[in-house]
Image 1 (cartoon, rainbow, N blue to C red):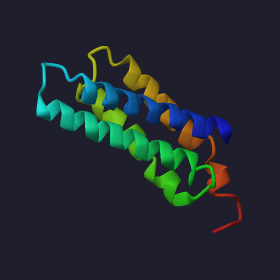
Image 2 (spheres, rainbow, N blue to C red; image 1 turned 45 degrees about the vertical axis):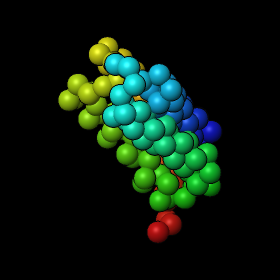
Image 3 (cartoon, one colour; image 1 turned 90 degrees about the vertical axis):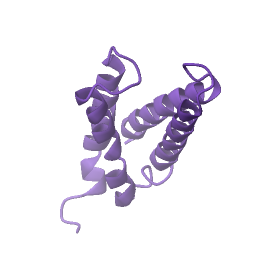
Image 4 (cartoon, rainbow, N blue to C red; image 1 turned 60 degrees about the vertical axis):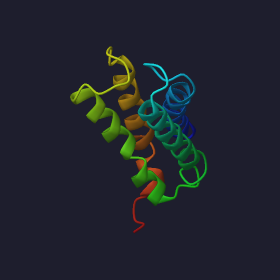
Length: 115
Protein backbone atom coordinates (compact mmCIF):
# COMPACT_ATOMS: atom_id res chain seq x y z
CA UNK A 1 0.00 0.00 0.00
CA UNK A 2 2.85 2.38 0.80
CA UNK A 3 4.37 2.05 -2.67
CA UNK A 4 0.95 2.69 -4.23
CA UNK A 5 0.20 5.97 -2.50
CA UNK A 6 3.79 7.11 -3.02
CA UNK A 7 3.47 6.46 -6.79
CA UNK A 8 0.30 8.53 -6.87
CA UNK A 9 1.88 11.25 -4.72
CA UNK A 10 4.81 11.48 -7.15
CA UNK A 11 2.42 11.96 -10.07
CA UNK A 12 0.56 14.61 -8.07
CA UNK A 13 3.80 16.38 -7.16
CA UNK A 14 4.83 16.43 -10.83
CA UNK A 15 1.57 18.09 -11.83
CA UNK A 16 1.76 20.48 -8.89
CA UNK A 17 5.35 21.41 -9.75
CA UNK A 18 4.56 21.99 -13.40
CA UNK A 19 1.60 24.16 -12.43
CA UNK A 20 3.71 26.21 -10.02
CA UNK A 21 6.38 26.86 -12.66
CA UNK A 22 3.86 27.91 -15.32
CA UNK A 23 2.01 30.06 -12.80
CA UNK A 24 5.16 31.87 -11.66
CA UNK A 25 7.08 31.98 -14.96
CA UNK A 26 4.61 31.54 -17.83
CA UNK A 27 6.07 30.79 -21.26
CA UNK A 28 5.58 33.48 -23.90
CA UNK A 29 5.75 36.31 -21.41
CA UNK A 30 2.89 37.26 -19.14
CA UNK A 31 0.03 35.40 -20.80
CA UNK A 32 -3.05 35.21 -18.60
CA UNK A 33 -4.08 31.97 -20.32
CA UNK A 34 -0.81 30.30 -19.31
CA UNK A 35 -1.18 31.58 -15.76
CA UNK A 36 -4.74 30.19 -15.63
CA UNK A 37 -3.48 26.82 -16.92
CA UNK A 38 -0.71 26.90 -14.34
CA UNK A 39 -3.16 27.62 -11.56
CA UNK A 40 -5.46 24.81 -12.73
CA UNK A 41 -2.54 22.36 -12.89
CA UNK A 42 -1.34 23.44 -9.47
CA UNK A 43 -4.84 22.89 -8.07
CA UNK A 44 -5.11 19.46 -9.74
CA UNK A 45 -1.78 18.49 -8.20
CA UNK A 46 -2.82 19.64 -4.73
CA UNK A 47 -6.18 17.88 -5.04
CA UNK A 48 -4.56 14.62 -6.19
CA UNK A 49 -1.88 14.79 -3.51
CA UNK A 50 -4.48 15.24 -0.79
CA UNK A 51 -6.50 12.34 -2.22
CA UNK A 52 -3.44 10.07 -2.29
CA UNK A 53 -2.23 10.98 1.18
CA UNK A 54 -5.49 10.99 3.15
CA UNK A 55 -8.51 9.01 1.81
CA UNK A 56 -6.53 6.68 -0.47
CA UNK A 57 -4.31 5.62 2.44
CA UNK A 58 -7.47 5.04 4.48
CA UNK A 59 -8.53 2.66 1.70
CA UNK A 60 -11.62 4.66 0.81
CA UNK A 61 -12.93 3.29 -2.48
CA UNK A 62 -14.15 6.63 -3.77
CA UNK A 63 -10.58 7.97 -3.63
CA UNK A 64 -9.29 4.93 -5.53
CA UNK A 65 -11.97 5.42 -8.20
CA UNK A 66 -11.34 9.17 -8.43
CA UNK A 67 -7.60 8.74 -8.88
CA UNK A 68 -8.23 6.76 -12.08
CA UNK A 69 -8.36 10.23 -13.60
CA UNK A 70 -4.55 10.28 -13.58
CA UNK A 71 -3.82 7.45 -16.04
CA UNK A 72 -6.65 8.68 -18.29
CA UNK A 73 -5.29 12.25 -18.11
CA UNK A 74 -1.73 11.21 -18.99
CA UNK A 75 -2.83 8.73 -21.65
CA UNK A 76 -4.81 11.51 -23.35
CA UNK A 77 -1.75 13.75 -23.20
CA UNK A 78 0.39 11.03 -24.76
CA UNK A 79 -2.08 9.97 -27.49
CA UNK A 80 -3.01 13.49 -28.57
CA UNK A 81 0.48 15.00 -28.16
CA UNK A 82 -0.64 17.52 -25.56
CA UNK A 83 1.75 19.63 -23.50
CA UNK A 84 3.78 19.82 -21.37
CA UNK A 85 6.88 19.05 -23.35
CA UNK A 86 7.46 17.23 -26.59
CA UNK A 87 9.55 14.28 -25.40
CA UNK A 88 6.56 12.45 -23.86
CA UNK A 89 8.86 10.41 -21.59
CA UNK A 90 7.39 11.99 -18.47
CA UNK A 91 3.90 11.15 -19.72
CA UNK A 92 4.78 7.47 -20.11
CA UNK A 93 6.41 7.46 -16.67
CA UNK A 94 3.35 9.09 -15.09
CA UNK A 95 1.04 6.57 -16.82
CA UNK A 96 3.08 3.67 -15.43
CA UNK A 97 3.30 5.23 -11.93
CA UNK A 98 -0.41 6.00 -11.75
CA UNK A 99 -1.41 2.56 -13.05
CA UNK A 100 0.96 0.87 -10.59
CA UNK A 101 -0.44 3.00 -7.77
CA UNK A 102 -3.98 1.94 -8.64
CA UNK A 103 -3.54 -1.70 -9.65
CA UNK A 104 -1.17 -2.88 -6.90
CA UNK A 105 -3.59 -2.24 -4.00
CA UNK A 106 -6.78 -3.55 -5.68
CA UNK A 107 -7.17 -6.29 -3.06
CA UNK A 108 -6.84 -3.69 -0.30
CA UNK A 109 -9.84 -1.83 -1.68
CA UNK A 110 -11.81 -4.88 -2.77
CA UNK A 111 -10.98 -7.79 -0.43
CA UNK A 112 -12.32 -11.22 -1.37
CA UNK A 113 -15.71 -11.98 0.12
CA UNK A 114 -16.52 -8.37 1.04
CA UNK A 115 -19.10 -6.45 -0.94
